[in-house]
Image (tube, rainbow, N blue to C red):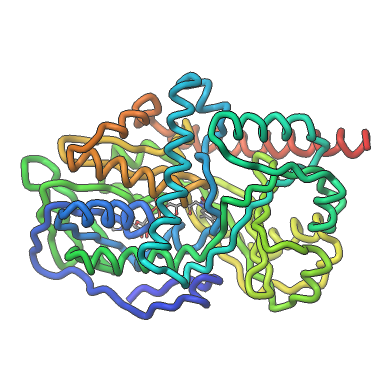
Amino acid sequence: MTSYIDTYYKRTLTSDVVYPGLSGIHDAQICIVGGGLAGLTAGLELGRRGRKVTVLEARQVGWGASGRNGGFVSPGWAARAGQVLERVGPDHARMLFRLSMEGVAMVEDAIRDLDISDANVTQGILRVSRFENTRALEQQRDEQEAEFGRHLRLLTREEVRGLLLSKKYHQALFDEASFHFHPLNYARALAREIVRLGGSVHEDAPVLQADLEGAQKRLRTPSGEVRAETVVFAGGGYTDNVIPALRRSFLPIATYVVLSELAPDLIAKAIRTEAGISDGRRAGDYYRVVGGRLLWGGRITTRTTDPRDIAALIRREIVATFPQLETLKIETAWSGLMAYARHLMPLIGPLAPNVWSCTGFGGHGLNTTAIGARVVAEAIAGESDRYRLFAPFGFVWNGGPFGTAAAQLTYWAYQGMDFLRERRSARAS
Ligand SMILES: Cc1cc2nc3c(=O)[nH]c(=O)nc-3n(C[C@H](O)[C@H](O)[C@H](O)COP(=O)(O)OP(=O)(O)OC[C@H]3O[C@@H](n4cnc5c(N)ncnc54)[C@H](O)[C@@H]3O)c2cc1C
């Protein structure tokens, strides 16, 4: 049995349920490849519509990005609002943003309806700026209020520095309606519900081959086969070459997280809020205090093998922001893969008749996997064609090795721009 890697979430996992591998031939209406939040939410949405669902997960439910992320649930997409607007225009961009808000509501609803108390929800996300930014934040606050009815509160530099004792920070927008939570306990609860609704979930069941011609699709694992009318691919950044056209449409991008030792008093010398914090840089840090420990994520890279010392890399970022945490020890560190299409929006839509893609959620997947899965489920059930809102983005070639190099260069360029902006702001203040 594959085991979860050592993360905060594994350490605080409440479920010890193990789902069986797949052996022999199984019939299903819908086969879902991938037991992350995209696949599980698709399973839940389809199960609730009375469909017989089988989920095949190569390792364990939530083993991928869904069980190792920052846990921040907020509206938006991995693509920035401006990028979406540029491609599809204002009306369409607004519809997409509303979908992303519906995704947040879906997670809240599932936690309430399925009574997932071990999702450990804490309200509030603080998005801090590392340079003087009052005017832009005011504009953002007002636009979000006028267009989407969201209430964001602008915090002055003094207020921010009362919560986060760092000279790096200036103003912030506080969103009390967004929250952070335990994504692995949440994912496991969705799997339980799929089974309760009559579906089946299989772990250690990697799909190695897919025959998608004809009315009956066949998905083969090392010791079994599922025959299904409809297939949903939801393999995230771990998607392999089973469908080459899908694999060519995204780049796997790695990112890192660390968990500190238990040190509530020391951490309180730096961080005095329960809210999740993310900084406004294009390639920024995010962190939160969980049970007296600091959980801190950051950095993205196209290098998908782990560097020798993730902890040291991230520790440098922590100490650069909060020198008072110099002595804070890191207990564990991990990486995760995200799937990014070139346009940074999800890959949602049909790949062939009755074959769907529900992947490519990048680094903003906790709300978007939910709504992505719902629009795919609605399409399969013939209820809506909301999935067409994603059509302008499409399954574009990732650029192969050139795409990888370009993505890495873009990240470095972002880092450079962030650095210059901060330096200008520091000189001015
Ligand atoms: C470190 C990190 C921090 C993040 N922080 C945040 C955050 O705070 N907020 C936020 O909104 N988003 C965050 N994200 C992004 C978010 O976690 C992802 O976008 C989301 O979880 C993707 O879900 P998924 O189901 O598409 O993919 P995954 O969760 O990766 O699941 C895909 C699953 O498919 C399985 N699979 C792949 N191929 C096969 C196959 N052939 N057969 C069977 N199974 C297969 C894999 O084993 C895997 O379990 C973060 C991501 C990472 C890595």
